[in-house]
Image 1 (cartoon, rainbow, N blue to C red):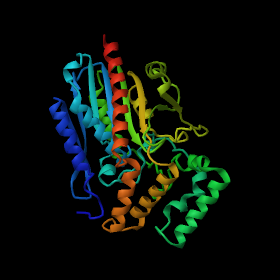
Image 2 (cartoon, rainbow, N blue to C red):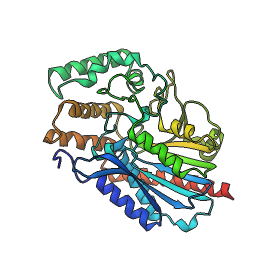
Image 3 (cartoon, helix red, strand yellow):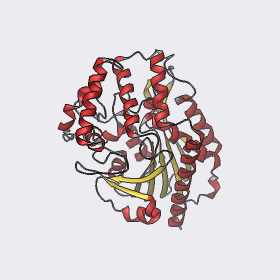
Image 4 (cartoon, rainbow, N blue to C red):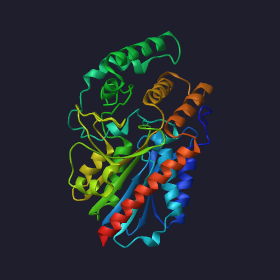
Length: 369
């Protein structure tokens, strides 16, 4: 057992809650085991719950845990929805697919990244081609590999970051850092050099469960960007996709459209300069499906604060002791940044997520006619 990790929020508890709710709802269950264990020695994996006809042509998909620690919000919403949903309301041509904690290692170890320090939303690339070359990150990399949590080296790293922020502004510096980088496995927002386990597993799930689909709406569940307690609904892609007009008509002014690219900007707090998003990967993987990829992004704390705790967690996994009281403090802080303990926050994000899913499911049922 790793004493540095809190147990009141754990992968095992989230999984047990999800499986119980899915079983009670009469879902078909599928399991994709992960090769590694969690901090308590627990087996890890991604579970999938399918409600409705496996050959249905219209699907609502909910994906949690792309960024591991953010999976607590997503998992809670998936379980609560399953607990309240009446499967008898689904017509034969409509099904619901719940993909639970696609980055199980990240959730278990309370990290945003996966077992290889990879940010999954920078990893969905064609690695037969050269990855993006984020040259501007090179001057910032040493800030994120500092060997001290507190002390003169950390103070120097803080000063370097503050100098860049004062000269260029916080959004400009973050547009560099959060764009992703592919040279430094020990750096922040690392995209990897090959498809990760979670990347491969998501593609396997899509192949196995969407073979009959003609229309689908996929919701990737995230936290950490935006105003506290405010769930933003976004659609994120590298270019306009065929069903974008349908997505805009369905959600109207609720929907933010984010077209990513090296020169893209966004006031949402979500990185517009990044490539390798799961949303784009799902579009690419399902060319015959009229797909609407959505992201629900629930705001927590100010970006500068969240970023500071991410740096602390990066230090911990590079230089710290995972069994120490210091580790426990950092993990509790990181958990709070991405899944606040505030019961009002938790209720607000659940209610809004449920509303979004209900509108989407109603539209799918109407399409199925």
